[in-house]
Length: 387
Image (tube, rainbow, N blue to C red; front, side, top):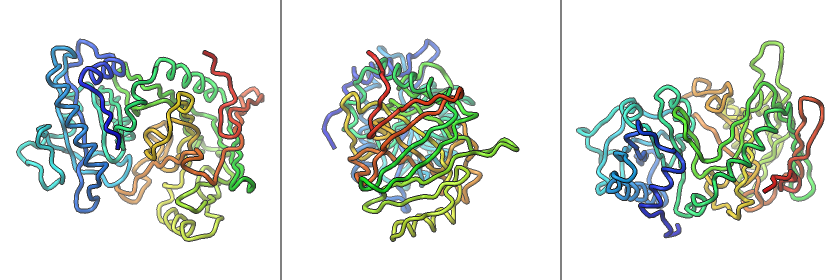
């Protein structure tokens, strides 16, 4: 990890820019998840907890400047990205952060309902993503949250970007997706093997995630810079989804080609050990094969490079997610998985640094009036964002 970090004044300025705190906003909670015997610690996770503790220490002395009481809350990891949060966590001293869930003090237990009602602002630099559960809980409790799964100091430059301009661009993309009825994506594997995927975008509204959360009841990623939409999943009686085709994803060295029918993975048409594992996994957990998101990131145009962490990498270009979707306005939620720890929303980002064998040759939007617009060619945007 880089040694770059945000100073106390920079943290205060970031909170002011991202949340636009109001007079009634009196408290901010920083959430961190803890390793256990099933999901063991790693160096990046340890560094992230120390980073969060440092933020809590840096912000507390500045209370007179930002007007917020700052607390550090830890909880047992939930075993998979975007699984529901536990019922309770623990308040911890930033100078004595536990490295294992067994090291927590039961006398400092606090219910998550209490955390979410008592803190109007939340930062969540966790190992496993909290985006889905916090998106679902924010309207109920009225907090706003910046979720930062996998955050590292390598992402600090992305926090210093002009988020007013980023927000403008993602809103331009939202306007296009909102009036689209479909997207046609053409993939090339190893420069020659072609696969086509159609995404049904009817009956859906896109979301613009520009890294600004001024209104209560919302949660989203930070760093940010994407527009995303859930393809129509066919929930309206008599109106089936038209999402279908082939979706290639490079997993390790192997390209797994998923056959998509009715917005779900219907099978794996490629061969190899990874393909076999994916076929078995999705046969046992069909909801994990739901086409849950088309995402369009914009940060690559600002000079940001991928670092191998989805939180940042998905903000750089086109990505497609499989799994849970109800937190984005879809129909697939935790109840459709076999157990809480099986719940997943997994993004797959199409950048040459991350999937060198798979390229987005083109992406074309079909609008409700029947017209079309080429959105991307060769993995790059072809639309004019202006200045």
